[in-house]
Image 1 (spheres, rainbow, N blue to C red):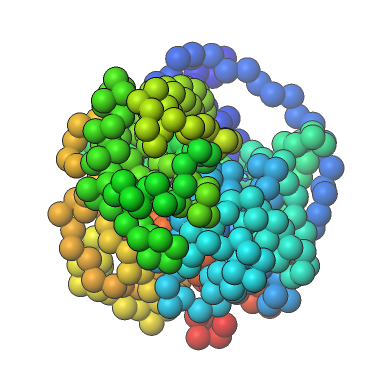
Image 2: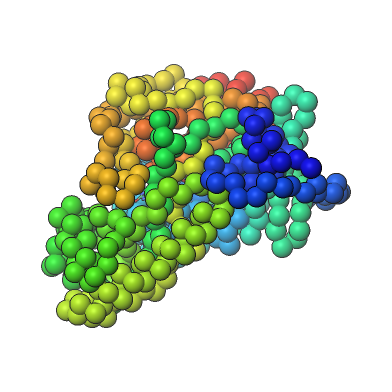
Length: 451
Ligand SMILES: Cc1cc2nc3c(=O)[nH]c(=O)nc-3n(C[C@H](O)[C@H](O)[C@H](O)COP(=O)(O)OP(=O)(O)OC[C@H]3O[C@@H](n4cnc5c(N)ncnc54)[C@H](O)[C@@H]3O)c2cc1C
């Protein structure tokens, strides 16, 4: 019988390797079973398949479809939006000045009253807005469906992927695939090499469970100094974060995150990011489950503790916690170019630059008590570009990436990871994938100037 560690020893992550071999966490069991061979129905044979319906996946699917490709978007949750919706983020960073689909989403949110300010939005309206955009563009959307495997032909092209859903196990074929799963799940299953975490230690950024609250309003938060300014001017302030942490300590809770932030998403609706779960691998389902339970326990205790303090907290209640704990960092898939911190420091531009990033390097504490909650890792960045080559997989020919899982180092990822960059990355990948599929070429054979 094969041992799980034998899979790991091979180094290469085979497409046939079970999920557990992709873990970086502790291996608890050594045995494996041989899954019997079976026939899978082919659901679709199409031009472009986008795996993951978060900000990057939305950009990719809309752009591939609008550029003439028959496009399918596969998403494991029951809504589109990824961290925007299933993780209740409520705040879009680094979208300013970005044209194309990012601007279109902001304008549409504004028009449908989903947008409280240029940055903050109502997650429920976001779900609806994204579904309507995909429908109008003719994207075939499959929700509640997880991509679980990828099988290649002898030329290192993905021939088909397998999914699991209410319909059981199914196969899907496309000319070009785009991995927008955030964690690089499709690419890892297709056997691509990847990095994860800080280079010296492998430590990853912590996860956070977002919360929507009732019983607090923007006016309370501004007057008490937790956020500065109303509406468009409103943002969490550093002294406000420290003050909130002090209140939580006063309520008797040793909070895991020292810089908790309120975001007012309507005058009478508030989102809160208040916890950190440290050292959790985005490739370890058991660890993510445990982190979710611990995080939900902590945020419930914090809100109960604050309510007991009385005063402005007297009526605070949790309306909902996110269905999906927010994952800041997963696999960074090897691409044709790897963005590095040196590129950020010199403000690199590229002939095939697809998007300009202005957001700083933002590394949340890797262990409890380290630094001041978050920091730049000593990297002073200048606005820089992401090249198309970082969106093209090195090890599999017909595969592109967009969003968190593109090819970059630990520090570059900590900057480009925000959603205002994920969307334009997706838009670029979608354009190139469509052109490649419609002209029977590989993504690397399409020049950026062509699209
Ligand atoms: C707590 C937290 C706070 C943050 N704060 C901000 C902020 O204020 N502003 C900001 O702009 N950014 C912020 N970020 C960063 C940003 O949210 C992410 O880096 C961003 O979501 C990247 O977008 P993405 O599309 O690559 O990934 P995601 O949003 O993670 O989307 C990936 C999608 O793929 C789906 N998926 C995953 N695996 C599979 C599979 N196997 N099969 C099918 N579907 C799959 C997921 O369900 C999800 O919908 C924050 C992140 C976290 C975690």
